[in-house]
Image (tube, rainbow, N blue to C red; front, side):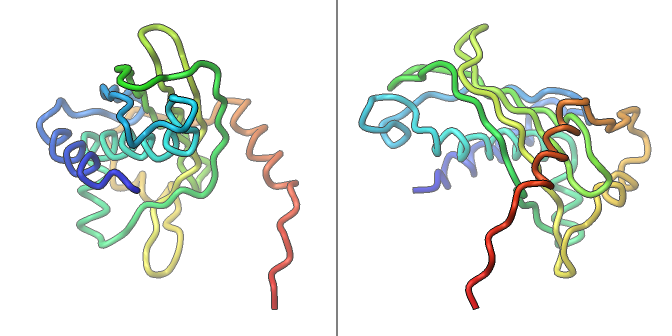
Length: 177
């Protein structure tokens, strides 16, 4: 089940935390609860992606993006992801979720998110996400025009550009007609 109450708490709490600029890192503290683990007693791989939504909400609220989205009646959607799992997070363990916007390609924003136990990175994900309207995707460059004072360039690291290129070569299944 989606963690609606935790999402609401994250959004409300973010309103009282210090503001963030593009390029800053959001850190939120979480605990692996009974509904988050699988039959191996560890934070489920799918649940990790779900909990990463919380980091993007915190970042969006604190950075002003969620206010802009609400004002314009836009939305926010994930368009792709790549994640690596390296260490287990077991039941009742406290961990930190680090989230930052690392760039955009003119259309999409790219987030780097990490789940950590202290200094140990347990998982790391690259998330491609975009602002959407009733007309479709709102280009990231257009969204950035609403944040004119930012010193953040949005230039993507080479490894993200390589991921984008690799994803563009992957075949897409034919639709059932």
